Amino acid sequence: MSKMKSYFAILFLFIFVKCFKENTMEVKLTIKYLYESYVGKKGTLVVQVIDEYSSFDIIDTSKTTYFTSVVTNEELNSYDINCGFFHSKNEYLYIFCNIDDNIPKGNYSINFPEEPITNYRNYNIIIYQEEILEFEKYDLDLVDLYSDNQTIIIEENKEIYELKFKITSYHQERILFYSIFMDCSQEEDELICFINKKYLEAILTTKESRYSISYISYVFYQRVFPLIPRIDIIYDVQKVDLYIGITKLIENITETNRFIAYETNITDINNLYSNLKFISINFENEDGNSYEQSCLFRKYDNSPLLLVCQINKEGINWLKEINEEKIIYDDLNVKYNFRIQPVKNQEKIKYKKEQCAYIYWVYPPVLDFTKNDSLTIEYGLANPNSLNGITFNEDVKDLTCQNIGEEVKRCIVPKSHFEGKENGYYFMKHDNHLEGKSFSYEIFPIKIILKNSPIPPDNSKGNANLFHFSFYIIVIILIMI
Image (cartoon, rainbow, N blue to C red; front, top):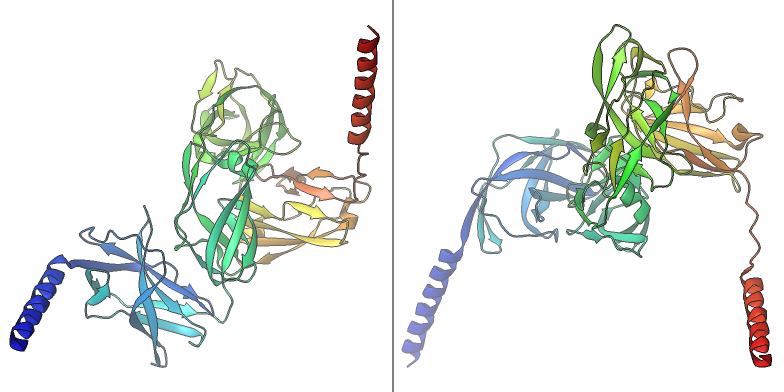
């Protein structure tokens, strides 16, 4: 009887192993490249891979490790590191490896195991590595976050939206949604960030959009997190037609990658930051030629809608007459359709071919001097050496600034810079090629708070008392009648 039981046990095991092998899928992954060739004190090395047969269909954002690899430095010292697979919906497939702070700084190469990985779900994974991958480990604290897929559904009566990220390493770095800095707070091993509905409405172009999450590093500039899937935004709203009249030219001096600006008749709309590639406007040059230029719409607090354009023809330029309505439908903003009305405006624009830089972001958006006599402001741009003479007030000397890394300009802003000024929104100005100042209308104005505004009296109680008194009078009159 015992022999019979042993026979059935062996038979069962054989059938189980055979069925398991038949259900195991073989996956061949080819190393493509390192997402970034560096890592901080504690962080994640991310490698994009190619699934040759598109057979890896598991969504896995847990950052669980399943195998070990080896990194070797220039002194031929080797260290084992734990690795795994990261795959989110509609994103690339990555191999990630955890680099802990016990590994010294220096230059390393990484080698993945040649033998198949058999302990990942029902997959038999073979990794092909054709070239040695090299990276540098810095003795620096660098931000490292990851997350599941996340979706924001914009609702009519909800103003603030929340995003959550898991922390591998975080040291108060600034986190961006598109070009918007989010307010974030850390709760244990999770970073919770908040974004205002008005900022989302300013950048959304369609009812369904996807945006990456990035961060600012003074060493490596702006970088997108590879292990944070793009955020899905859903916003179904009835669009409104805007009949845009170009009224006057308000910035007429420019250089390469800088902007001129026109005011329009539109004032009572949400803020918006349209993409440069969507609008083409015709201009004319003093040599008699007409040409198309890329433009964008900008709407900021306390300002009308602006049409902001780049000019790339040396000399004197002006807007070519628009003889009929130019319609831009639904590719600029989720809430508005733009109808540019006929206009003839020949105000002159002076352009010089002089390499400058487009400003991508500015931080912070508010400078509050009620508790500080001096604050700092930073600008992100590709060539900080080309941005000089920064000021908010031409009546005093320019701000003292320095370049941080290769793509950040940092300026010290003393409260005395606004002597004689009031609370309000101030556009930044910079030196132009005619030894004067030009506005940077492609970025939003900074809100300057110099003193606390008086708190308006609370009339709610008085209004309530007035209501009750009026009510009693009416009741008495009705009783008398």
